[in-house]
Length: 270
Ligand code: 13P
Ligand code: ZN
Image 1 (cartoon, rainbow, N blue to C red):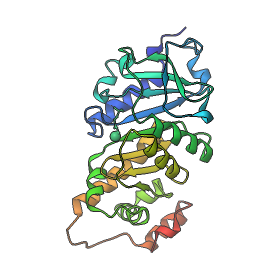
Image 2 (cartoon, rainbow, N blue to C red):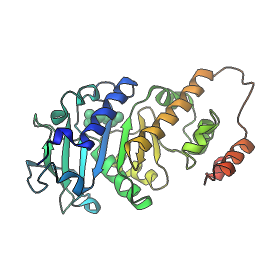
Image 3 (cartoon, rainbow, N blue to C red):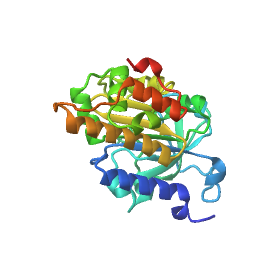
Image 4 (tube, helix red, strand yellow):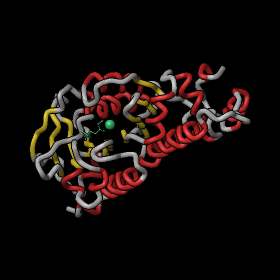
């Protein structure tokens, strides 16, 4: 067996969590990531039949039976993942019934996966239907996005249009717009179901007064989605209340859609 500490997926998780911490997106234990791993990428490092312990998922993730994920641990700090990946991360395989996660590696102090596993697994299920290449679900608490949920109307059309209007690249990066949930209790199956419902249409979902979810085929794509929303939200918060001299118009957005061959939410304009 190869040394798992050299596995590319461990490196991706440690580098990404460290970067997110440095950006201020993940205070204390804030945020979580789940990354679906193709079995052939795991078997050089782990015997995927060798189960350390079984952990109930709290719901039936039947459609993901047999799938393997590396997931941040609940209560673990993103700032600590890089120095102790085996304690702060875990590799789990979803059982046939979907109601148990078989721990293959990690959570070495007896811990378990993020409390947001329902939102992650339910979102993976929906995003895989939309795009079989989807691998990552990422959740974090970026400052400006969060601040914006205090002062902007939390309506999908209005919020997306505002963020598209903040900078030219927004619509290019998220032409499909952003789903919005009202404030809800986190860590529950209910918020998982509501998030996954939004993930049928959106790769980005904002939880009012809590944070953001992103979905993508790899770390860069997922990180880039959240990074772009956060940058646009920063523009909004930096200029909120100031008189506007210039603005991106609906016609500008239509011109971008044409130039970049984008399928945009046309109904979010006007
Ligand atoms: P966990 O520590 O369980 O991952 O929770 C952090 C969080 O951001 C809850 O939404
Ligand atoms: Zn959170």
